[in-house]
Image (tube, rainbow, N blue to C red; front, top):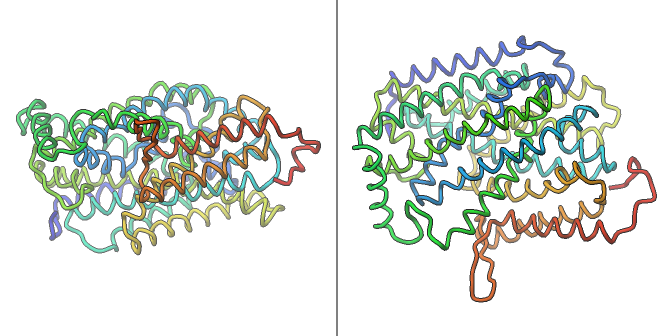
Length: 495
């Protein structure tokens, strides 16, 4: 990686970053609404149609860390790194089937968050607060990882120190405060177009410089064969259950996160969500192409001390400086969009499901919006402090745990759309057991996402989130069947 500032790439980067900054502040006037109301600030007034929602959800789901981490994983471990592809294929039928129903329930009852929906069905305060807290904690390291992606591309321009990162996220914080969800929705247009240009240019030009795709795969195959172990351009038999369970669990968790649910609930209709579930697999194709950059880096002879540097190092080696600056800007903007939505989703949860029911029950609508704006600033500041003062690996480990945790909200949110047979104490106990088991198993594995299950003489590595969710579901169903029906109204439930 360069140690001196590259003026050509740097100026291109600054130019595009300035463009999205202007768009972020202008967004408050776009589809204008009363930003003193939480549904306007935090959900864009629930008025985004198919095109805007497609860019917003795609920009929210496919982040800067995705662009950096997926090729890095493929570079490091080969075929196993492609688990993100089947998971993004599995998730869209789920979105098509489930999310329109959730949107309709939330729109009818003016719910802003998934925890609002759970509270609306079961009453009480504490379980909804637990769902909200799970979402916030699971999202915080996710925001920090967007900073990791931005750090990597800024470093590729020859810039050292934390000041550029601080400036970028101060700008992000200010226009998110001013414009709410409208800011990332507008910026997502620019971000996605730029990423598509970068990826199309990369998959067209890089293989031509390396002798074609056959040479790329051949080089990768020789590389992993020499390494030995469980790496390779095809999966080993020992990886099958880990790969499948990781893909399945990740798919089930993906739209439980506050940021993805915020993108869904900002849609103007249930039909819009179905249309997007049909169109969003275009991003899966893009993700597959991005993942191939890991193999291309191997074929290009890229050597890095950290796998996260692979994509910038590949571009630095094979592209002119102006394109390096353009690609760096695209990836950095890919950090801004999801980071903004994540902070907004977390702020919505904190305000509606922690602050309002537990601290200030008589809060007015305008006070709700103000509170959420302040919390969104605090969330971004927390992520920034996290990444500056703590090791990056700590954020990565916590994000892996975050996936295990957020998966435990699945029964309360999804099952409750289809049945009223579940009981609140059973859901609470199932959630607590899933969180406890998932956390324990993860720490037993050194905060790794896979646990080896032994059945007879066979060993099956399985994603910890799926194991914990299985226990959660079994406890919830069994306890719901045996516990007596509640004799009090749901609005008075103490839980």
